[in-house]
Length: 249
Image (cartoon, rainbow, N blue to C red):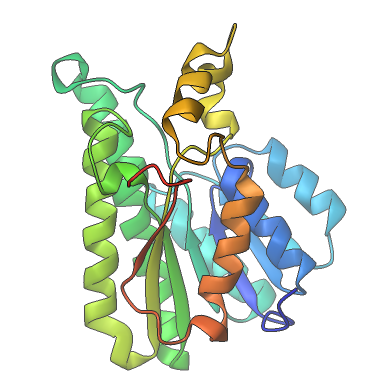
């Protein structure tokens, strides 16, 4: 258990399910106030019911500037500050190669994974700069380090996230902002439920190709997030941390 987070305010995108939900729950368990942002409502309602005193939320799309602005303003109105930003929202592309990727799919993936991260960060960052401190953790992927972890659009978006993370660190580290990224491998979330459909042949193949021999659970990514956001990682700037069971070796 980390003691850094009592009274800290954490803004999490993609908080209704999967990794984002696990992150929200872990920080709540550690005493933080958490604000969730997602276009899916159900998981947000559940978190609110369990942690009504320290959790609030806004339903919207990260690529919608008006919704993001409204969400950040609501968070600041309720909790007065944002200490940690977790840019976790993202979508997959079904491993589609470029010739099978139409413009609608390309735009959806890039808008959610990259433009959404840019939009949310730019809404939160001025307040962090004003207070002189802040932590930003972006959700990358092993698809941002090598091909094969997604299709053309997803792999492009995750490479872009890694570049964005490094540039944020370069531009704002000396202003008190610490920015890093986590690059998960095979994490069992609702987003990749199709891999487990039927006899789960795709899921079994992925597990067999992973040196650890298994998929990870969202809580494992959340646990790493707790460390990266903590004072114990204060000298970590612009780093991309794989959590992939050895996949990238």
